[in-house]
Amino acid sequence: MTIQNNTVFITGGGSGIGLALAQALIQAGNTVIICGRSAQKLEEAKQQNPALQTIVCDVANPHEVDELMRNHAALLESVNVLVNNAGVMNVYEIANTDATLERMESEVSTNLLAPIRLTKHFLPILQSKKEAAIINVTSGVAYLPMAAAPIYSATKAALHSLSLSLRHQLRDTTVRVFEVLPPLVDTAMPGALKGEGKSMKKVSPESVASEIVRGLQKNIEEMRIGDNALLYWANRFVPSIAAAQLNKM
Ligand SMILES: NC(=O)c1ccc[n+]([C@@H]2O[C@H](COP(=O)([O-])OP(=O)(O)OC[C@H]3O[C@@H](n4cnc5c(N)ncnc54)[C@H](OP(=O)(O)O)[C@@H]3O)[C@@H](O)[C@H]2O)c1
View 1: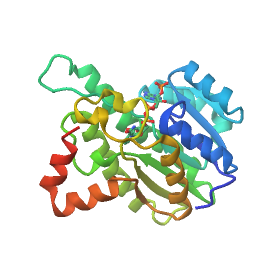
View 2: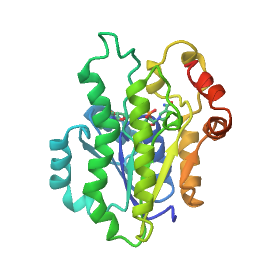
View 3: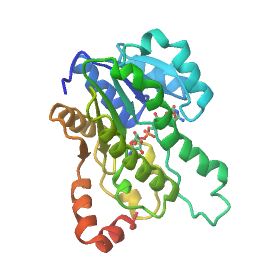
View 4: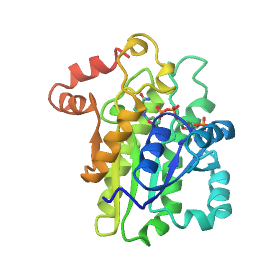
């Protein structure tokens, strides 16, 4: 797709992969709006990139998403690219007391229900545009679970499935559906990992952002970045080896 003159809305754009993508897209000549829960994080992002537009919104909260759409209707009407990037990952044993239902449900709300809600809200806006896209950020754990992060893995598998269905349903419209599967990235998120995951090599969020921009230019619908290309094939042909490798983390 054309990689300039778009208006892009990125959830969780105040840090990590979302912020790196926002920066790359601004540099490429797009208008970028980011949202997140922390006003301070968004303010810091704006200080670094004055062209960024920021909105405080907890996408896991359906009332806040309704308010977002209502209070910023004029601005959001111009959006032609939605990036469902915000995510949370908890590492726990489901049988243990730290795996409370509240924590588990909050992962489902952020990682799965929020993209569903935002897709539903934004679709009429996107469908009115000559060229539009939904970009869902999942993970290699969408292909096979990392047992240490059971709910996170389940939500990413579900978002992968949803991306496939949505792509099929929207095939005759102007809306393209992309999925981005980053490898282990040097952001706050892998901080939750224990064991080998802590010391494993991580790529920079900036390198992931440039892979996404390249993928969009080439219309790569499922962007398996870094080691995830290998993980995809390993899971098809030697699933037990792939699972053992992933579960070292
Ligand atoms: N890092 C990795 O190794 C890795 C690998 C594969 C996939 N991914 C995926 O990449 C995406 C970005 O993760 P990241 O690594 O960049 O992590 P990150 O630095 O922790 O960024 C996550 C962002 O999401 C925002 N966020 C979380 N919950 C939110 C909510 N309810 N509403 C609005 N914003 C929310 C956070 O901001 P606030 O706290 O201010 O809300 C934060 O800016 C996630 O979907 C993640 O699953 C990451």
